[in-house]
Image (cartoon, rainbow, N blue to C red; front, side, top):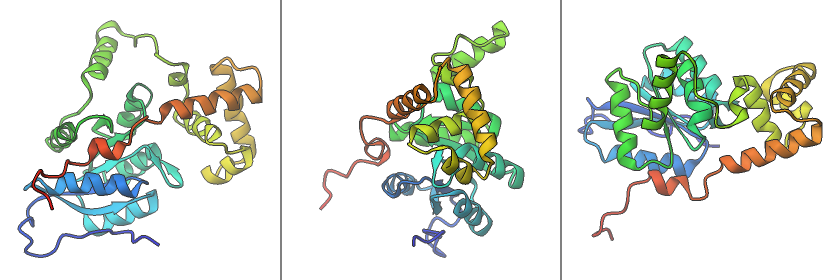
Length: 249
């Protein structure tokens, strides 16, 4: 079993005053790529890695990071739920979401949950570092496209028309919808989210109504299509991991 704390800063390592970073992601290769990117910076160091909420909370308590990079999809829970829990328990910890999921659906949810920024894994490594430093300065990081969308809402008093009906779902409905698309039935979803079957059935009914779906089979089909569309065609690890030096052996 993988250790909760994948790495701690060695004493007198030359980075003892560096910003302490926690990486929370359920893909080991992605964590490795991000860790390599961060360790190339003189003022940043990775103090811990975690793949789920329990390990993330333990890592925060043990290593006391300054900033956490958190994915939306984690083992056993939603990254949105983790953001809410961390915000409640560790209000001073800065959080930046690094995810493959479409920002138009998730970014504002992440900000409401407690994150200070949202960046997609398809962005280049330099943008990940820019986003992290901006969050550490107490600022909010969003893409230019999403920033304009939120400014439009502020100026005009209403948001632009959603690019997808899925944006109308609540955080919990979106979580249920995502699990349906992954092939989970009502009972497994209830067990996974620690909710009653009746509650999950209610969420399913609301999702069908909001997405104008007529049957359970239509719901499953639509959910599967959406989950598949969310997956990036190329490896997110390649996007985030730094390139090997030209003279590497």
